[in-house]
Length: 266
Length: 281
Image (cartoon, rainbow over all chains, first blue to last red):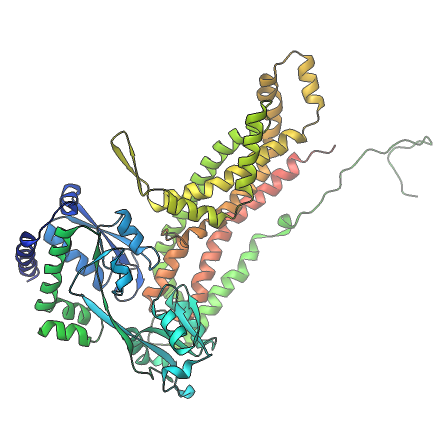
């Protein structure tokens, strides 16, 4: 079944690629010559990209990257990236492809070539004590709110709703700060927060607000890599059509997101 | 009056007995590790009583231990290489500071002062973002992975500190050594290489080892620039465990412990050498 899927991907991609025009820089040839595709993925963002105890990087995005490698018939090398260096790595050519939970933003499109359609989407919400009785985003005004360094919604939360953002390096630190009462709420991806509210350890905590900033995620290639861009575009369409994204969500314990469902139906 | 072994009425100077100073390091015993161990066990015990369904904190830590230790080996590798590069360059710079040529002397001094007074993290950032990820040497592409760049970034302050250690050691020798050598018709170079530097070596050893211990502890700075060393891996392991707050303390305590176990013997040895080489002038 896996091979079948890859074959289907290959056909779609070849058709799309052959229609692409203006090829001046071609990273696909480089990858094939090298025999390895270098993909930038997250290593601290469960379940999209995280470390296994043996040190290897696993998760939804590494599996998607593996599909691309299989399609090109090359080996894969995962390069762990963080929000602050992922676009730079791509610009430098240190990675050929970046699938790293990056939100698709117009200013980012100027730096790297984000491939349409978007492969995933997530929104922003908060985790907070039920006893606080938060109802609106504006209730956060003047309150300390924990966040993760480099997340785009930190700025939105502080500017639009007047929250005081306390940014941490990792989720563990942020959750610990929330438990210790250092902040009123933790602003993060809604899918992760839903999972937390079901956890008995977080009894008494809720996701009280309406999800905002439901923003699509974009995987990216270097600017000017039109052929590779077109190929990836075909692959993403195939991922959606075949239900690959939905399968991966289920496999890694994420409730199927509305975005993935709609894209599958389209 | 106190009874002295030398019985004489004459006002003679008693033999000088150096006062044994107990430095702080020498009073630390290895059992000081116990509080850290207790912290790991204590915090994980609390964690265990909290949740019965999931693996306890200690078991979780055990599962990640091989990976974390691998990461620590990486820290050691970075520290050893940065020390080697820094010592090589620093030796040249230190001798340059003693040169009779004014240009060499002043430029060595400037370089030393510049890198000695720069924050290590800033130098690290410069090395990370200014060096390319691969260099092309006559058609051969040599990759420069992140950890190599971090090594270079950390080697720079080490270089400047080694340079000062050498200059200080040479200046600490009594000038009579230079004069005696001159009277025996040694050239300046011969004096430096055959008489001065050999005497300096043992004076330089303790501060040099001290610098190494400090460097080793500074390698965790590389986690800020994304090198997969022990600190980065600890963060990633915590994320992979779903950000459980109860794991924070045991995991970071474990990192403290491995650094302590590695650096403590170096500190002990330094103290011993310091005492052995201490010069009474």
